[in-house]
Image (tube, rainbow, N blue to C red):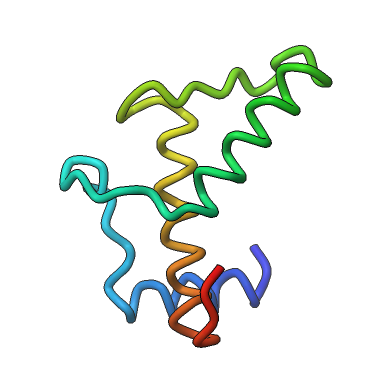
Length: 85
């Protein structure tokens, strides 16, 4: 794990963004999380023989879990930089 990723995690935690129950709370995904997940799901399926087998149909699917983690990352970046992604 890199020093930068640890620093990013610490910032997200300080902002109160690290909440594994985000899906249960019904919080919508960050638009960039949805866009990136859609790209990764399509790219993986078409070009890598569905290697990851991304699923985004509901809470608990591997793609949904990744999107919640991406939500935290993008929200942390926005708070840190003051820019909207």
